Length: 372
Image (tube, rainbow, N blue to C red):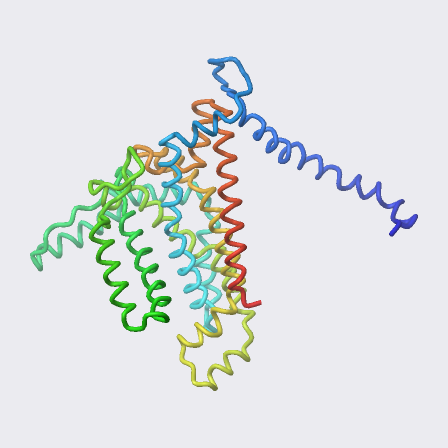
């Protein structure tokens, strides 16, 4: 279909209006992205310790052989373990704040108010809360532990040193994931094996738990587990802070908006059928929230894989012993502290491929669960 004379006449004025934005995108977004892809195949080092030259895939081969890269990738994944708790907390809070009660607008404002605070300010506040010597969190733990010791004779619990500790609860997290997987396996096997399914799953659980050390944490110097690293540490402190920040944030607002769009006729039909609160939530509310949940999960994965820089920079400087260094903070240190621009660009593009692949998987499998 040919453009009319009027459309042709309006084309160039329209392009004139679009040109500033287009140039800004090319200069400040597309250009740097393509430039980083090119220098990922070079040995560019701002310290000029060696001549600048094309080295092909050497940065990528060194990256995948680098133990630090895999440790920091594990840190990134570990810090995302609080994501399901944060999403579930946002949904629960949205349900509570969606009730038609007097003064509910005030409560919504109070819960969302911390979101307006700068991330750096919140992290400085939490850093003070986690102080092992005079922080209020440890003061409360020590007070409760002392009271239990005096009244009940319970042994004194040593308060964690939080941001100064390399310990973590990775084994516990994997145990919870293992339990969820066993429950799913039991559901599947029960259809084929009947009552024997429970025996098979129980035997498999006992064998794997005997072989696997669930009371262990991520090792500091290698990719593996260590019993000495079991406990609360810097990574867990950042996860707790992240959950607190996320529960009353934008996810809560998205769920509030989605809850207001659930047709009341569905609730009335469920009430007529005699459905209780839990049955109504599972069969009416939750299916209607599927598109919102899908969006939140996808964006949370992207944000989690890209996150960790502010926390590391403000609270721990990537320590102790690199336990809070994520891939994004690793890119920063390589580029702007060690000045290995080529290597940092290679890490950036590997991270981009990981995020792209995870997003595609979410779209492929998550979209099937959408109700509409």
